[in-house]
Length: 148
Image (cartoon, rainbow, N blue to C red; front, side, top):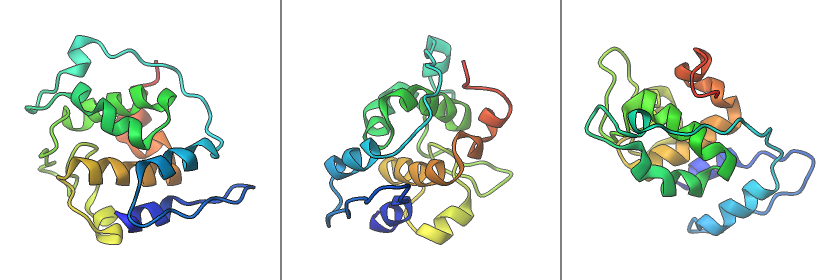
């Protein structure tokens, strides 16, 4: 988990506080408050989008996602999660190495370590990926979904 946070500390014109050990969510919220993020459009999840098809439910992950993303990003990330895994933390893509809630590819896990099926680890790595590549890292966003 600490390796994931270390990768997320990108300094953009300001001195960033160092994360305490062990990880505390309060530090990460403070870190996010110092980041310049464009405001995405708000997305309202319909009942069809909030219920997962793979035995999961994206709404149950709202609190966890909110620990790693700013409030205005949470609905977009839940929408991406719905399209990627249906909210099922045990989802596997049979055609690739993608796994977990955000269907993160195996090369990310090789680089940072962790268990792709652990919801918190999956969401934390999703934040690292978002910090590096934005929403476009997820195929549904690239296809124009989750932009309402």
